[in-house]
Length: 81
Image (cartoon, rainbow, N blue to C red; front, side):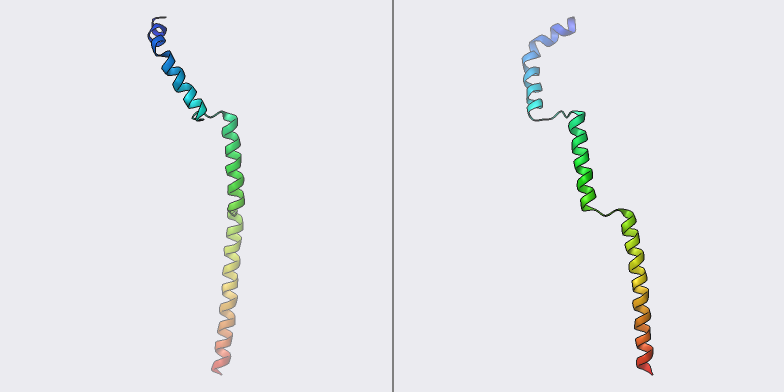
């Protein structure tokens, strides 16, 4: 009870600070946090490619480069003759 008696003179200030924090949305509820988390995941999903797709694309680019090199070498050998 003694601890409560010490806080009573400061209670208006504490109340004003808590109301300010609530109005400025300093404290977040778990539901709001989960909603924002889902929004961030959806935005990242729309903005970035999955790593599997990137690896597949890199593999295809490597194959295309090899084929272009073969065609280039074929042209060079035909032009030298």
